[in-house]
Length: 435
Ligand code: G3I
Image (cartoon, rainbow, N blue to C red; front, side, top):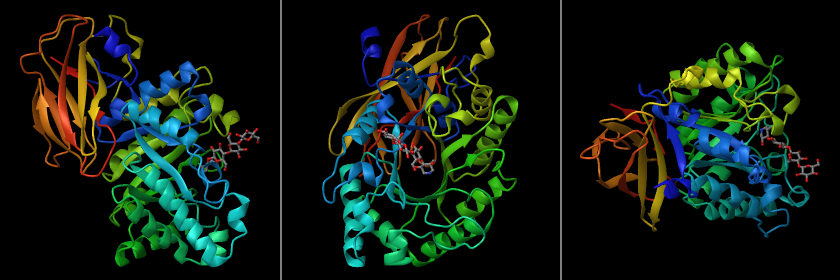
C-alpha cells in the first residue's frame, strides 16, 4: 500500500478528526468549489513547487502555455508540448484544467495582425477549433475571449486585430466556434477591472445579457481579480458577482492575487473568498501562481505561499474562510483520516477511480468521504463502501461499510465507475471525516 501511495498520480487530501479540511482544495471541495493555481511548465521540475501544487490545489490554469503565441506561433503549425506537460500533470493527479486563453489581443504572434478580415476570421476559428479539439475532454473550461473591453469609463471594445477587422461580432463568433469544437467544455468570457460595478463591467454585463437573450453559447464569466492598494477589492465585489450569476452564467475568480503582506493581505483574501462563497454560482477560485517567487508581480508578494513555499497569513485566512483548518500548530499528531485518489482504468466512455482512506495517529471505527464528479459525468457503480447522493446526483458521500475499523495508520480503499457522458476530468474529493 505504501508503494501505491508513493506512486505518481496520487492526490493527498487530509482532514482532522472533526473533519475540517486541511488543504485549500479539500476545504473548497467541501464548499462545492474548486481551488486552483496558475502553473508554469518550467517550474514542474522543482520539487517544492510541485509538492505545494499537488497538495493544495485541485485546478490548474496554464499561465502562458496555452496562449496563441505559445501554441501557434507559425500559422497552421501547433506546438502543444509545454501545455500538454501541465495538463498531463494536472489530470494524473485528479485536478481539473482551465484553458487560458483562445482569443486575446496580447501574446498574439505577429502574423495574426497582418491578416485581412476574411483570413483573420478563418485563422481565429481554426485556432479555436484545433486547440479545443486537442484538449477535448481534458479542459473543463476555457477563457474563450480575454480582455476585449477597454479600461476607463467608455465601456467600449478594446482595439485589437479581431475588433478592428471583424467588429463586435468576433466575440460571439468565437463562442459559437468554441461550442462546436468541444460541446462539453464550459465557455467563459474573462476580464480584469470588471470586479466591481463600473463602466467596464457594465459593458461586459450588457454583452452577457445579450448573449443569453439571443442564445449565444456562454457558460461563465471570469473575474481576474488582480488587486493592490491602487485597485483594492471593491466594496460591491459580491454584488457584482451576483448580478452576473443572475444572468444565468457561472462566475469564477480566475487570476486572484492581492499585493501586500500580513493581516491586511489576509483580510482582503478572506473578503474575496467569502464573496465567492456567498454566490451559489461562483464555482471556484484560481490564484495567479503558486508562490510569490514566480508571480508576474513578484515584488508585490501577492500570493498565498512565500518565496520559500511557507504558508502566509493570507493562506490561513483563505483556508479558514473555506471552513478548513491547518491545525493551528497544535501537537498531538494527526487524528482522523486522510484520502488519496487515483484513476485505475480509463476508456472512451468512462473510468474507474480508487480512493484510499488512511487513518491518522489513532484508530478509527468509520469514515466518510465526499466525491464530486463534473456533470454530466455520473457514477454508475461503487464498491467497498456505502454511497449516498445529493439531489444533483453528482456529489456522492461514500461511507465505510465492512471496512470502517482501521488501526492507527491503517488503510482501506473504495472504488467507483464514472460514465463520462462526453466530459473528461477526474473527480474531486472532499475531506475525510472519521468516527
Ligand atoms: O519565457 C520568456 C523567456 O524565455 C524570455 O527570456 C523572457 C524575456 O522577457 O520572457 C519570457 O516570457 C515572459 C513570460 O511571461 C513567461 O515568463 C514574457 O516576456 C512575459 O511577457 C510573460 O508575462 C505574462 C503576461 O501575462 C503577458 O501578458 C505573465 O507571465 C502572465 O502571468 C500574465 O498573465 C496575464 C493573463 O494571461 C491575463 N490577465 C492578466 C495576467 C497578468 O498580466
